[in-house]
Image (tube, rainbow, N blue to C red):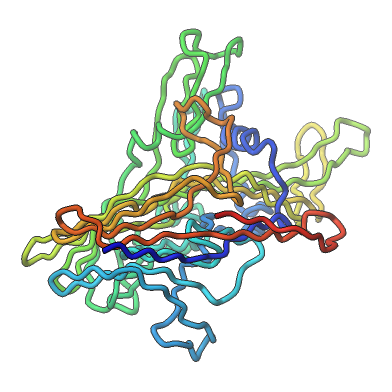
Length: 467
C-alpha cells in the first residue's frame, strides 16, 4: 500500500535584511587568516572591546528559531502559542516511543529568519536532541598562535580556561530534549556534567577532547604563499582549516585542533541515549569604525574589530539502546556544510573606539560603526532511522530557490568558487524489515518574494513558485 501525502509548506525568500555577498568567500579568507599574517602573530586581546560588548553570541544556524517546541495542549495559556503538528510516523519498541513529525513554531517569524529544510517556521522532529546555549563566550574558546619568542601557544578564553585572569564568564547550558525527560546541565571546571533543575532522574556522562583530525581537515581553503618570506618552498599552497589551526611557516608543518564536548550519553528510564553526531557553527562578526586621521596630518587609521567563534551548538541522537534487551534504534545522517551567500550588514551606535597609542597617538572616542555578520555551518540532516522492525528513509534534493551555500569542502574542485542550492526534504519512505515500502510521504514547497530589496521599500508585484 502506497500512501502519498502532498504537504505544501511555505518557504520564504527574504531579501530585505540582507546584502547579497558577491565576495563572502573573500570575507571568510580574510577573517580566518588574520592570525597568520607574516606567519608570526602575537595575540593581543582587549577584554572590553566594543565587539565583545556589542555582539550577542548565539548559534548561527538558520533553524535556531524553531528549537522551541509548542506544548502538548492546543493553546499554551502562558505564551499563547498554538500546537501545530503534522504527525508522520511513530516508532514503538519495548515501550520506547519516537514520534516523527513536522512542528510549526507559531511564535512568529523573525526579521532575519531563514527557512529550514522543511519550510519557514517548520522543523522536522525525528529523535531526541541536545541544544547547547552559549552564555557569554563559548566554554572552550581558544586561539592557536605562534611567535618567534615563545613558539606555538594556545590562548584560552572561555569558562573552562585554566587561566583565572581572564575574568568571570557563565558556563554554557546543554538542554536535553528527550520525551518525558527534559533537563539541562553545564560542564564544570573539572569537565564533569552538573545537572540543574529539572532533574527528572537522568544520568549524564560526556567525552571531552580535541576535535577529530579527519573532520577538521575536511573543511577550509588553500592560500598560495609563493614568493612570500618564510613560505615553505616545497609546499607554497597552504590550507586554512575552518575548525583548526595550521601553519607551515619555514616548513614547520604545524597542525592543531580545538577542544570541545565531543559526545554525550544520557541514561533515562531503561534506555541509554548516545549523542555523537554534532552540528558545528562558526559565526563571524566584524565591526568597522570610521576612518580617523591624527591632527598632525599623519596616516589615517580605520579600526576593525573581528570576532570568530567555533563551537558545537547541537548534538543529534546517534542511537538509543534498551539496557535490558540491548535492542537499538540507530540514526544516520548526511552532512551539510557551507556558508550562506547572504551577509547581514547593520549600523551600530555608541561604540568605544580605543584609538591608537603608538608613534602617533589618537585618543579613544565614542563613535558609530558598521557591523557585518555571516555564518559558516557544518550540520547533520537525518537520512535514516533503523530498528529491527522498520526503516524510515529521508530523501533530500538540492533544489531550494531561496538559499545557496558556498562550497567549503577543502579538496572539492569547486572549493570557495561555487554556491550550490541548499537541500529541501523531498520524500519520506517508511519500509518494513524486508525493505518493502509501506508508506511514502512527498513534500511540495511554495515560495514568496518579500520584494523589499529597494531602498524606498515600495511594494512591487511578482511571485516565485517552485514545485
